Amino acid sequence: MLATVAEQQDISVEVTSPELEILYQDEYLVAINKPSGLLVHRSWLDTNATEFAVQKLRDQIGQHVYPVHRLDRPTSGVLLFVLDKDSARHLMQQFIDQTTEKSYLAVVRGHLGEGRLDYPLKYQYDKIADKKADITKPPQEAVTEYRCLAQTEVPIAVGPYASSRYSLMELIPKTGRKHQLRRHMKHLRHPIVGDTSHGDGKHNIMFREHFNLQRLLLHAAYLSVIHPKTGDKIEINAPLTSEFLSVLSDINLTVESQYA
Image 1 (tube, rainbow, N blue to C red):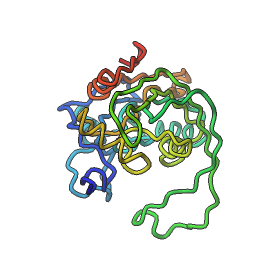
Image 2 (tube, helix red, strand yellow):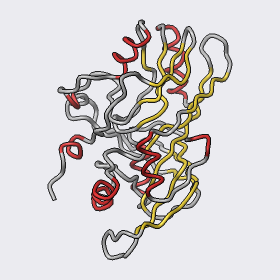
Image 3 (cartoon, one colour):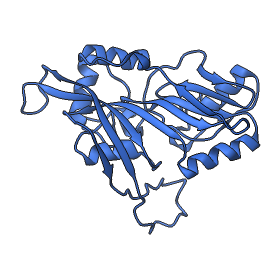
C-alpha cells in the first residue's frame, strides 16, 4: 500500500482549533496545549503550511512570544513560550542543563511493563538544515524511563494473530535527543502507534481504517520548570485531546483522571 502524504512527511492532519488552549500565563511565561499537526514555527519540512504555533499565539495574546523548547509536529501537549528575551535565555539553559521535568503519554504496540532504557542515539541530521554539519558525531547519551498505566487487547488481526495488544505508557525522557521517545520505543520493539517514521506500518493502517486515527499517539502531558524571575517551580499539565481520548475509549484503555 502506498504511503499517504502525511506518512511521507511525518505529519499529523488533525485540524487545529481557532484558538490555542492556554494552560499557564503570567507576565513572563505562557504555555499552550499544542494540537497534533501544528508546527511550532515556519519550517522547510512543510513550505505549504499556513499556521504555526508562534504566530497563532502571538496574534491570540497580542504580543511577541519566544519558544524555549520544541515538540515534534505530530506530538501534542505542553509547549512553553516566554515573553522576553532575558527569560528565554534562562529557560533555554534549563532545557540544555536537563533540569526540567517532563512526562509524556503514549500508546505503544504490545504489552510493556516498567523500566529504564539507557541507549545512546546517533544524531539525526536534516538534509537541508544540517547539510554543513559534522556527520561524524558519536552517538549521544539518551535515557528514558517508562511505566505502564493500562493494557488492552483489541479483537482485530494484524499479522498472524487474531487480536492485537497495546499499552498506555508514561514516558519520562531524562535527556532530550531528537525523536528520543519514538526511537527508544522502536528499540524496545514497542513502537508508538501512529508513528510514520519509527513505527509499525501495519498497526498504523489498522488504526487509521478502524478508528480513523490521523495522528501520532504521543502527548506531552506534564512540564515543570523554575520560573526565571521568581525562582518558583512551575508545574504545567496538558489534558489529552479529544481525538486521543476517543481512541483510548475505542480500544478500552482507561486514562487517569488528571490526563482527561
